[in-house]
Image (tube, rainbow over all chains, first blue to last red; front, side, top):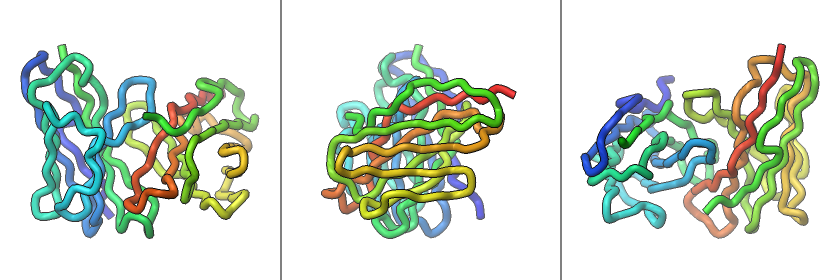
Length: 115
Length: 113
């Protein structure tokens, strides 16, 4: 079974530029999460989708971050404009059915460096 | 905000020794999970313990949960160099219906051959 795919793996941009990350979850997984992991810290949830609807985006900085999940499958996370403090690893995770299959499967992440 | 606080922040042991990591959390939970993260990679789920369970085993892993103290521990027995990684506890809060996890800061484990 293929795992969660993310691209790109690395991205370097200058502040005020925009960037987009892509995630393809495990086939059939209804729930998709985006996390931000700053160096030396645990992952912090940014947004949770159930199919193509948003379940929780309470910690998403909506003035600069946006996310969508097309047709309830792939998802993109965008930052515009980027700030220095956005430098982090962005992790995508998927889950079969939240609350029943509790394990989340993580992709390898995209490491973003903002200069 | 981070739910879990883990200690120690870093742990260095010799191969063959046991490693114990602790996690404390703040709110009532449905379950607590442990994940491992190797350098430069995503997280891998290790084990889940539900709020009505006190102890769980999986291979060389042993997890305990004390809901009265809001704490958990992960024991890795007979450690190997390949166990070198960061270990995170993550909690699913009892009020959460959607599976959202809140992660701790992690313990960085180094196992020396």
